[in-house]
Length: 302
Image (cartoon, rainbow, N blue to C red; front, side):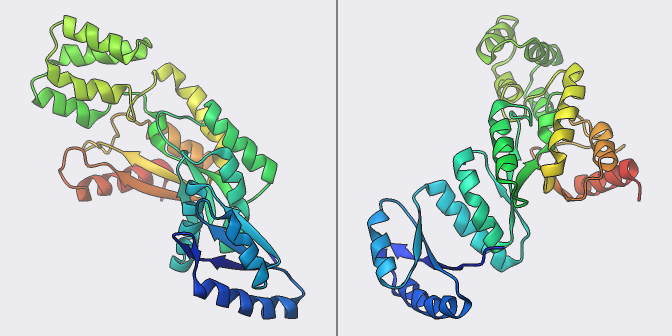
């Protein structure tokens, strides 16, 4: 754990706030008694010139965080600590460099930070591998991953498929679009081909999903995806148990939980497993959440 005395020096519109300056004075007394340094943390943009003021008021060091996403994440850490949260998701829009700089603050507030691995990314994609390099480089137990199981989808999104059928799209055209996705055809070419085949324009939302945030892989790629998940599980703090549609037999239509959950059990995963339902059919999540709980108990055992 950090031994220095940290103070968040609040600023508004580039002006240091009185409360931060007063806290530095109190921190100075405490740090002198402990034989430690006073470190002021200054969050914002174009505020580096304010560091000298904080030094003048008693800070030994000033850490200026001029990365907006990093600054926001530090504020989130502070809030998470106050709420008693132990894990915080960090979206992958934060750069690996900023993620590395987040480590001491995560340690300071005792909150583990996980980069979310969300479809269309996978653990093995180049961007996620850069975060893995940071995690290994720092050796910090406070930096890791939050994998969303949506990246393991091997079938088209069931609710979007159902809504397309309700809008008058023919099953054969949806099957054609899915096959084009499996063949690696671009979204633009797939759209052109299904329209040339006479598909209704109402197919477009479903087709966009197949190539977007609810895209899916060919089933032959599943072993590789599961291996990628296995490799990052030791660095994973929580998993997002994404589900879109569970039938009465408690089977998720696109995400292969019958492979995922046994892997977690075999590898001794002991982090959080979050129930994440996306109610795209607007039918309410209570029943589907119950079904997911039944599915998990069935696959993992009581």
